[in-house]
Every structure is written in C-alpha cells, then in structure tokens.
Length: 133
Image (cartoon, rainbow, N blue to C red):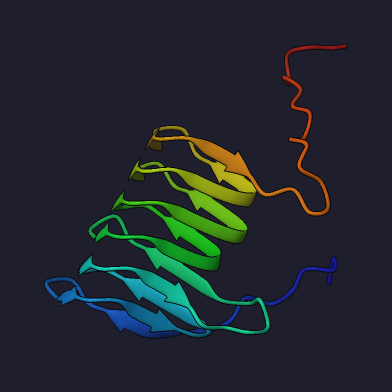
C-alpha cells in the first residue's frame, strides 16, 4: 500500500548492559541497546537492512546500513545508503552520509552532513519552507 516497502524484521538484539568490542556484521535488522566499540556494517545484499541505536545505546565506530534509526550516542562516521532517522536524543560525533534524512528537533550532529546523490556529484537544491519563492 502507498508503494512503501516493508521494513525487514529486527532479528538481532544487543541488550542493555551488554558490550561488544570488535566489528559487528548483520543482515536484516539489528537493535542496539548496549555498547559497541567497533564498526557496524550491514551485509544485506538486497538493500533492506535496518539498524536501530536506542536512546540507551552507545557506538564508537563506523556505521554502514541501508536504513539507520538513531536515538543514542554515536562517535564515528555514519553511511546510510537509503534513510537516516535522527530521533530527539540522537548525539552524533562524526561525518554523516545519507540518501534521505529525517531529523527530529533535539538531535545533534557534530560533523559534516553530506547527501548521497545518485548519478550526479551536484548537491540537491534546498529550499526553506518559510521562503515562498
């Protein structure tokens, strides 16, 4: 309905109080409520991976996935191949690359925002909602 693809199921969970030191690879969906000291990368080949970093979670390392939802703390670069959602308690220290961005009031990024533009190196034109031109 409405041409929206169904999100993959979150099949893996790193629970609150847990800590992983080292790189993490996943397919489909992963939710992090604990702490990761290492890179997180989706190995999904169909372009439908989802990663959720909850408000109690912390990641120190690079993140790469198709759809990324962050409400916790991330220190390192982020590469969202499709969608990046930054919820109100998101705190990002690092550069961010994204195809589409949804950022809620309260989210904070210390780093550069760089859109991924398919087939062109030119950045998209941005228009302010208050500007009627």
